[in-house]
Image 1 (tube, rainbow, N blue to C red):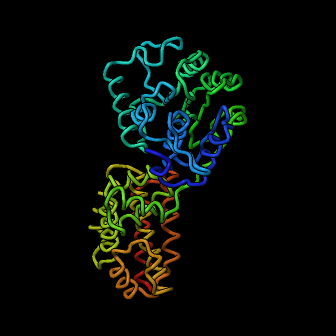
Image 2 (cartoon, rainbow, N blue to C red):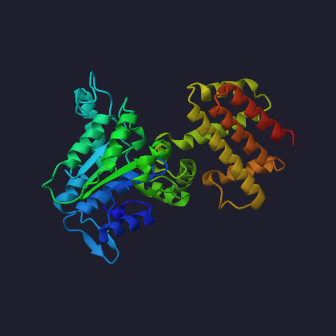
Length: 380
């Protein structure tokens, strides 16, 4: 991995390279932005470049060589100058004076190792460990203790705290003291998608770098390249992912094309002459898992369908539609319903999604929505 192999965020990469070249590296950074945009990937590459034995410097850029012993260790996330901190599951009978890994089971330790291997293999991988919801004070004490010790290893020590908002109150207060005592050739990088949950006093002591959501067209290109999916599917997923690589990966794993087809089929059933029993049956299937996110995903896909209908009706141009592979079906649909108020239907779907988030009965929301869509289309 090197800067050129990290996708997106060119502005941020230039800023960080400049700080290395000018030797003006802060003692603490705060990388913030929505989840899954590559904050930890850039943090690790920053640490790798700082420690590279033979960095490649050209004009205003500096890259790790990827060949030296230091770079090889970073590729495995095993460099002694790199510390990754993240939430851990509670150890049985552990207290705040124990080592952070103390009293964890062998199974838990193995899982943590597996997650680190997965992160090394795919720098965009999100470390996920069952029952790990807090960064506790013993993890922060270990950072403070390790950073205060003199190191014989050349380079720059970097501690990266993933999901920093998960620090407990005690951990956050202890961490604040660490920030108040900066050490030479040491940088701490906090990573969060929920900056508002951090102590203002912690934020004020960090140099902040905001990571913007990844532009939809760039994310689509990345998905096509990395996952060999079609342009049409990539466009749908990129639209849904709201600029997050992690969310996009989840949609690929969940087969979003199949979900879209099922919701369009549900629409077809709702428009049949005899529809009530079959519609009720299909809605029961949709909400059967009581997974609100799954229902919301279905409705977002339906909303995109009507959005495409609206665009095609107004412009007769398919360049800006999301469901590129269904444009023939969309054209036929608007030929059948040329007078429908598509904007009103889109708003009804948005209202239904709002109700889902307000915990209104899922069956009531879904059935009411399809009745409104039916009335809007067939009563015109």
